[in-house]
Length: 113
Length: 115
Image (cartoon, rainbow over all chains, first blue to last red; front, side, top):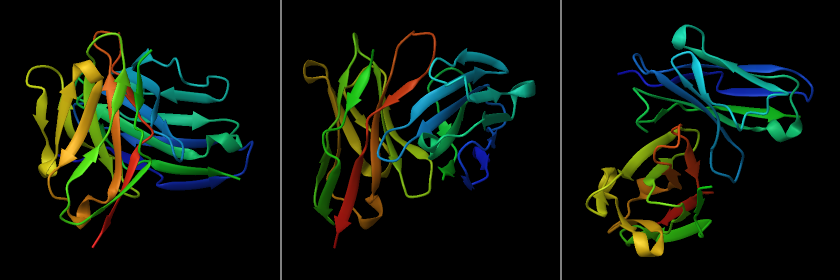
């Protein structure tokens, strides 16, 4: 089966600009996650979706980050405005159900200058 | 709150030597436990997981891990490493019945293999 697709692979923006990342999960996977991985740290969950509903967004900085999963398939994560500390790899993952059966994408590396 | 500690930031071993990566967790009960590997520019790949039952878990690529409740540990082992094992290794915990399936990761251990 095809894996979790993410784009772009790399993005460089200036602080205060906006940016969006896209994720296409594995077909049939109802659960979708966005993680932020800052250099030297382990990934941290930003948001979990079940179909197109939010399960957990307690660690999403909602003043600047937003995420949506329209129609319960693809998802977009947006940052507006970006700060220097947002420089990180943003990983998308999906699972068939709420069973910890994660498959991760390759991630989007964001550099904010 | 759950947390994971990986005390070794960087480990160097010779090819063919044995390997043990340490992982300690903090959680009120027995969590779900995972080991992931991340190669440069890649996402995370699951090596093995522990949910219940036999405390010695076999994974892919010849890796195994042992859950020790008394020590709150879940150390990863491999009897003989290959150059292709060079990567970053992450231990993670998941809560049971917490309302979400969040993984809490350690800070990772970078493994270097020398010929």
